[in-house]
Image 1 (cartoon, rainbow, N blue to C red):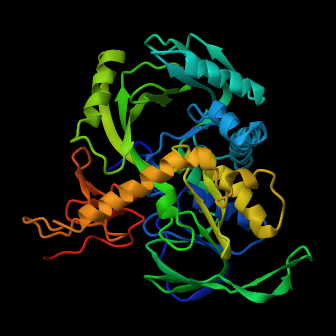
Image 2: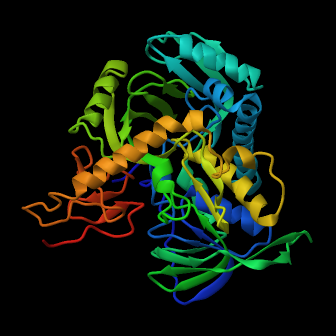
Image 3: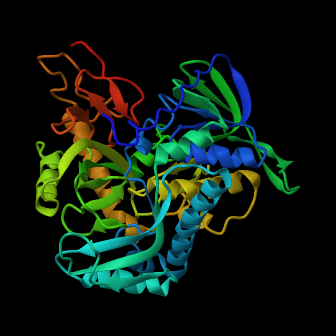
Length: 472
């Protein structure tokens, strides 16, 4: 599968790890989150390496719609009700700061990555109540946003929220420059970790205060061992189940995109709140039309690209599809990413996941919070995104759904796990859930935690760490 990003940029290959090494910090994952975090750590003088299972930017970063925005669907009204106005304000400020930080970094390093400031619209073609409430909430939080009834789109909307001064870019052009300044080992898969626990006693931290003495972590890869004081999981979905319990706290969703030529679009980035939640933006001479999201593994028998093509014909008569792709997104229980310490029992492990379809902006938020935690610097946004939070009202529905889906998948996985034709085990090697077939992508998908595999069993997406076993 290719996207307009992967076909226009070819980031140079990096060598795999060739020997056992010791470093201050190891980042697992060479997507935009891992590269941004590693780059900011290196700017602070912290020796950091990135361990990437495949290629730099070869995961979700290469298949995003590449919007950089604080406008994250109908979120601010919900955040104010469930988390309180102050936490909602901090969430907004963190993401607005991320947009600004992108522009500052791009200008500072003169990165030619098609970055442009754009208005961001959240629109409805059916009813206005939701977008009206969102506009009111955004204004209360100090966001430069307002309610409008005209968007410039080639179809009528009932109402929309317009967020000013958001942005879009070419993610791989950006990533190529930053990665060029880092030590990245490609084709280096981390299989397991050992250590990282508190071992008693107290030591002085870098600011002279007292801190816990923590055992170094050993990362065992397919190429050698890396010993590190700090470990950052920036690998989309954490593959370590205990501690952290992220397999209960996350699920994955797949959404689809087609790139169209001869499809005239106004400037701006757009997201619908109705039904299939259609997403639109210009990318050079092309228009990207996305949507049709569903829980990974909860497939509808195919046809998602067909829905997008029908909309393309309706909205952009005479347009032509030139490319298609899909992507997966980790969804947190309460709609806010998990950015911070991995678990209380692993004080020097950190995580950045659960970006809820807004990975470009959330990755920059993570690149501000995690380096501050490692350096012992206070970050006012860190408590909002802390993985140790638990907000029952916002989380209980998703917690029950994730738990039920996992239990159902495990039960189904206990029977009929071999296909009589190809002999491939149709049970996910992560936790044993029964796989489901995605006819749009011709892949096997895990409905429990989102691992994906080619028809022949090769792993495409984690948290599974291995291909499907062969044989009966």
